[in-house]
Amino acid sequence: MKYRYLLPATLFVGFATLQAQESVSNAGRWSKEQIQNERPAVVTPPGHTTDAKPGAMPSDAIVFFDGKDLSKWKGRGKGEDDAAKWQVKDGFMEVVRGTGAIQTRDQVEGDCQWHIEWCTPAEVKGNSQGRGNSGVFIGGYPEVQVLDSFQNDTYPDGQASSLYKKSVTLVNASRGPGKWQTYDIICIREKKDAAGKVIQPGSITVLHNGIVTQFAVQEGGKAVSGGLSLQDHGNPVRFRNIWARKLVVPPVKAPRK
Ligand code: MG
Image 1: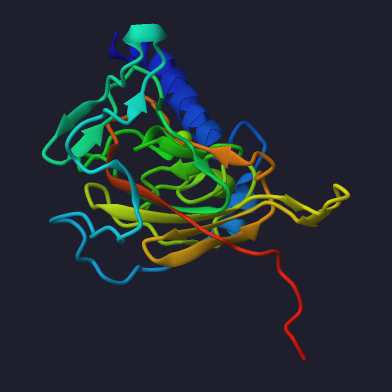
Image 2 (image 1 turned 180 degrees about the vertical axis):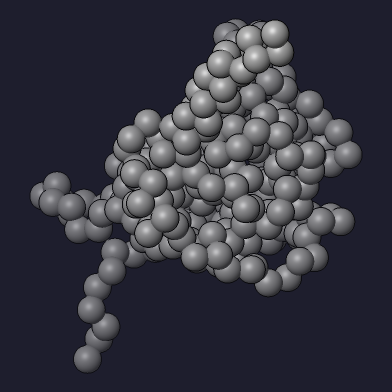
């Protein structure tokens, strides 16, 4: 009699395994061989000193979150009910599942640098895209993926510090679950001359825990300004110390002779 459950159990395990494989391979967009061959190398980031408190802000920082409240953020509601509904405690904000993405009320015009600190749950649950998933969206640019990519395989352009489905991270500079991590993101906006010809394409550069993981990738940057939005992907990811700086970056030109 006890074998009567064997076939359904086998089918269930087989199905679950297939589902897990599919979630890693993104339903065939990446083959298992491609994931194996193109998996970004792991680099251990320096300076593991960021857990106790956030880093200091530069004197010209435009502060969006200093650990106190979400007054500079809005949620998906409209009118007077547009407040961000994520939780704030102990100097950080945390995704509240189902409340939706939150975005800055103000935008930053022109070229800019953004600093964001984030932390995926210390208690590991799920795998691939289901583990510590959130994301950083800067107006006009692709998602900079937030994910627990510490010993957690997924498709290369879906892991932490990838530009989601656009650009694979150069290396995997992830810290472990429950550890605070940093993104420093440099956004260069497209520039045109008086005749409307593009003289500098828009680009995005990302440093993950101080390691360059995307360099001047020409994705986005057509808008002249943008705010920052954080994704609710259902996982209780935490954020702190979010600020921007305006940059004045002239178009690249040859050095004087
Ligand atoms: Mg995401």
